[in-house]
Length: 410
Image (cartoon, rainbow, N blue to C red; front, side, top):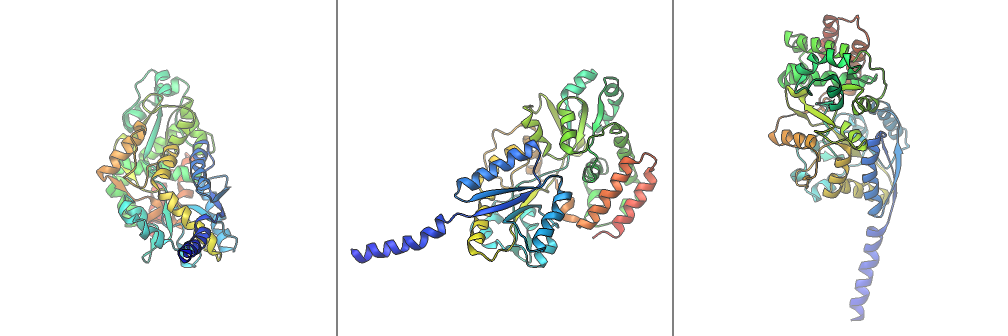
């Protein structure tokens, strides 16, 4: 009996430090708007409740501001415990340099390949058969958000598609509304253009250009129609002078603007403002023309650390991120879709339900972060920003410059 008790005590004494040892992890991200902060708060709360400690490392600004800071820190020998990046090509150099933690053991032990949907999200985290990130959400750019108040004030019904929206321009302007809210940042210009490209040009044309890097498709008459509609969007947003995306979203929330083309993260701002989908605002996936979801989003990567206790904590966070409870709590606040289909989403709003239905139908596209290198995306960001802010730049000029970038795209 004594020997049995001693053996049991020894087993417990060995196991307890592994189970009970708590670590503080600095976690960097660029979620700083009201809706984003509410969502990341759910993740931090869950990590703290598990026994570890979340040290928040929010970086003000967009991903374009934060990514270089994050990558510089990791490559410069000052790594954080975990960091948000877009799952896709953002981490290629860090993985090649051996600076990111391999978390394949967590993914295999928990059967991520069986529960993460679509599987392209996990594939985007996988290099040479090894998993380097934990996807946390599905974010899609393919949305337009409309203010029910703005259209009521203008005396016209809320439009059901892009053409109806364009036709309401005069009524909105007479009512003192800015038809289309747009922030003055390059990623917003490029993102909105991408939504117009999918809606007007269709998903097949988008794939030829963004996946196959077909420059002749970028020069085609079909793509000319896309640029013509982007020119109209440029005119509709000409009086929108705000800088940040969430400021543009607020213009829709307050009824100052008729609509905004923005990813589904905008829903977090509507939620913080207490607005209800279908009552206060309306959503149009694919501009109401081509209802489709792009399966981009966010993931967490874990820089290599020589301390095995830190590594263990990193893997605990990776497991937590994919858990059912965190998937529901985080994505309900973020406005994004969960990366697993076996969670209870019966309480989600009408817009999220539309996204889930489109996702279930398989009408999906990869995100540009998965198909184009960071350098190519930067070139397109710069070009579309110039186009959006330079009324004298013609459709022909911007289309040829765009095709030239695709010609050398990586």
